[in-house]
Image 1: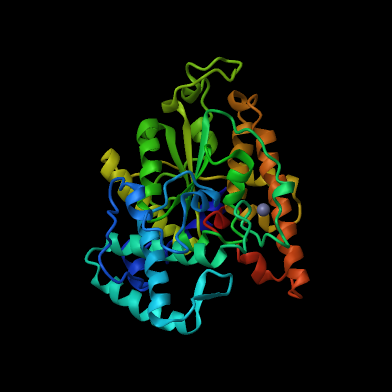
Image 2: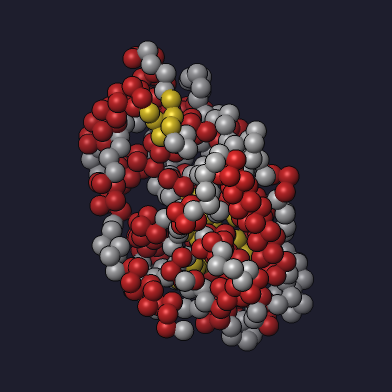
Length: 399
Ligand SMILES: [Zn+2]
């Protein structure tokens, strides 16, 4: 009982001093000149993309990666600038590592350029947006033609799409994957599995610092209201609430007005239960959660974001997978935990959440197999380091 919160305290305290500002300041990134496309509101997409720049990110390409949003204006701008630099210095850009990072001569030139632009940006919000957009632009260009757009694995060798178990999520639930840009298009990201299984309408990607995405998420949260919104996060400063604390009352206030047999009749959009999963490493999750609180303060006048901590679900999962497997330490694992814990509550027991948890779990197993096979094929070991590479904020809850 006490161990999860103790683990949290230990994990949290060194990280809690992180703020969006310090994170961004420590990771310089920039743009050459002021953005020509407005980044607030909804700029007419055509105005930003109709320049027909060679290699521009089209709407179709962008949405193919798992989002229904327009192409973020700032990402478009940065891709244009990268392409322009390529011409100016007559050096092709190339990508190293997992193809998300520039390398070689181009990197040297581009580094100089973007750092200058970053410094010139006045406020921290613009810096954060630039940092995120640049990360995403590089990942998009580096992964183009290499990764399968649906499963984010190398398409020729490792695509797992044919093995995904698709499933319909209970129609009162919606997941938001609030993802750090460094996790975007990462092969071992597990948040992506949720929209592979349930679809992007109910498991929606929201990239941290991308205003188009955050606007879509917040519009939905405003509609649902604070009382129907939770973040799965070990919020050290708030009251830790379990799934049972929040949903365990009978009759459940969250199901009032619903047929007791939970028929799948139409329900109002504003009665959807929204669950935000923070998808990033532990350190990055602190910045993501901090932004969520800031935005909550400006929208609801209260920065105390409702949080849920998983507890029993982890032991339920432990039963499923007795080995100390790393699938319990990831974002998809947290979703499985939530679904499993809700399933244990009598009021929620008849909407098939167990089947939905199982679909995610089966797909997670497929991803783990694909990643493992890839490493073995490349002659790398399945090391402890590999396993911990999926570290995420949910880890301390399940040790
Ligand atoms: Zn695929």
